[in-house]
Image (cartoon, rainbow, N blue to C red; front, side, top):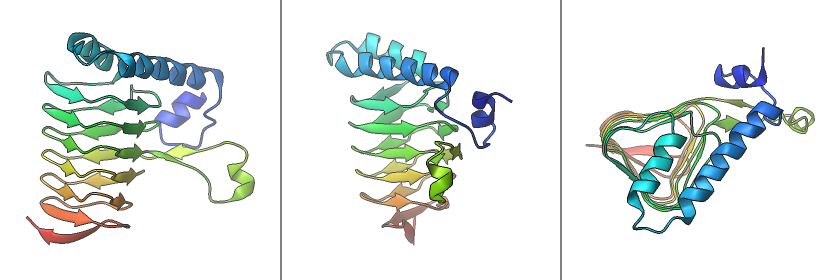
Length: 183
């Protein structure tokens, strides 16, 4: 099985093989092009995001700077908004529902590295998907880790590190992120 196939199926894979390196370089070049465009070049910016991401809807805005690993594993719903400095490490699928708003300096990281140092230095990894429901709001500086699902209508407070699933209709904050009240 090819390393890309292993990656897409959630298995342990080697990210520095030629095919995956080329995919990352393509995504990095599109991100570079996107991030250097003047703000009034909205049509060009939108076209780059549509080319880069796996799935987009009609209305979205991702403020520069934006960075991702592959792009083709990212799906955004209708009326998606991200403030500046969004980072999505997407060797696994990252899916955002409709009406998702993301504050500045947020990261969504699907990649995982071995805890065992001898394994880790061989440069293998795996990845687990992240899923965000409709109408979710992320404050600034939120970090969402691999394998997390966040339920619809929830609010993730600024500075939170989301390590476990968050149910629908709650406010959750902290490091690690925990539910503090129902909505």
